[in-house]
Amino acid sequence: MKVLLVIPAFNEEDSLPNLIGELRQFYARYDVIVVDDASTDRTIHAARSCGASVLCLPANLGIGGAVQTGFKYAVRNNYDIVVQVDGDGQHNPAFIESMLEPIKKGTVDCVIGSRYTKEAPDTNYHTPFPRRVGMFFSTGLLRLFTGVVVTDTTSGLRALNSRAVEFFAKEYPVDHPEAEALLMLIKKGYRLMEIPVKMRNREAGKSLFTFFRSAIYPLRVLVGFLGFMLRSTRE
Image 1 (spheres, rainbow, N blue to C red):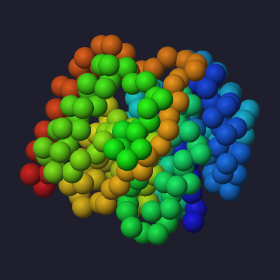
Image 2 (tube, one colour; image 1 turned 45 degrees about the vertical axis):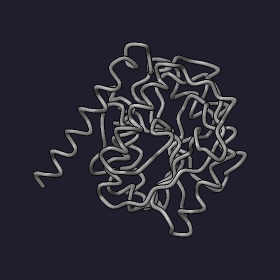
Image 3 (cartoon, helix red, strand yellow; image 1 turned 180 degrees about the horizontal axis):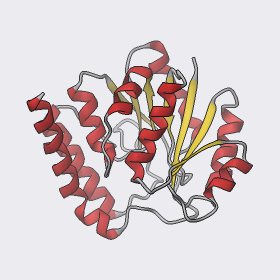
Image 4 (cartoon, rainbow, N blue to C red; image 1 turned 135 degrees about the vertical axis):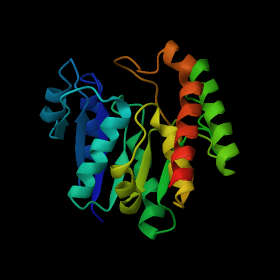
């Protein structure tokens, strides 16, 4: 199958070399593309110097816009599977192959790499308290709206088949998209599953998930959920 590894990145010049190097080491047969979200540092140079293709956005669209750009590229170039990998190096590439297997077998449409599964929680990963609160809120909200329990709604490590990618290429949440994207998939009948993964703490750069963003995260998730449900009702 034709697989694309999509890395949305904003000011990740220090993290990308190691990440792309690992991806090349583990998955030389897969294509890697970095979506630069109008970075102000040398993210583009860092990505290209490591041999990755780069899509350069002329303005900062946020994580949702950067990820959707990768999906659009995948659709136009007929990829069978897309794996979303954050540019900060926290996602361990060693787990990607196990995420691809259920999709290759056709049993699910989307696989989420989770730090919090009951059978194998990632006890070494430290989640900042405000972010953990936001994750619990979005998990509860998703269960309330769909009846489906996803333990790691904020995980940006995901693999999707071409059907799910085509859907997201047309419509994808702009702000704090992770939980709302799962709501969209579930409501549209796509099949999801989680597999346990181990993640790493950021070693360079700054997280976009600031204290202020953490504080307003529950409100944004709620607004996003209600907005999607309202649009779905009208359709």
